[in-house]
Image (cartoon, rainbow, N blue to C red):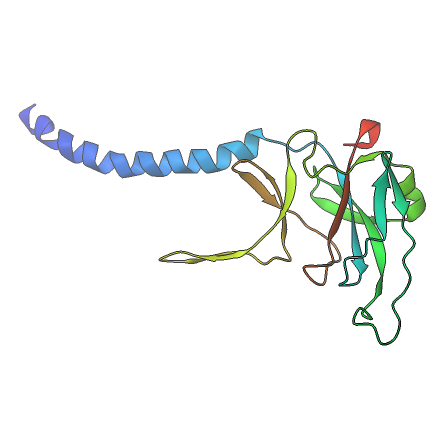
Amino acid sequence: MEEKKKNIPLIVALSIPVLMIALIAVSIYLPAMLIKPKFNFVYSVGGDYCYQNRYSVKSGKIIENEIKKPEENNSCRNYREARLFYYDVERNTSREITLDEATKLTVDDSLKSPDGFEIVSGSYSFDIFFFSGSSYYDKYLKKGAYNRKLNITGPTSYYDFRFIGWLRGKNHG
């Protein structure tokens, strides 16, 4: 009995790191299991580096803006046709859609979805011991401590991705 009492400090000392690891794992994985984004969204890829938005939202509908192609001596001559994509947050996939399909959707162009999620770009970061982070090309669905990398189709540069709007009504999810 006395030998068991001698081992109690050792057992406590060894169990503290195990408990800390378990608590950290729970705090990381529990939000991902409980928090589920509900609102799909539409984005575009393409255009040029001069921030001309081919598509925008007016009265809850996606519209096509008239954009004049740049002149030959303009610094924005890397013009590419913009393409539209529908992103399914449940499946974490995107598919290209036509302008006709997009105009039938009802969207909200707020930066945050009705359930509080937003789309953010990744970044490079360093700490004392490790390199961590991602590229600005990567996009994440984020709400508080929860974030999930999105499988965005199409961007070839940081400037290519343009969020258009969160889907509302019966077509949101």
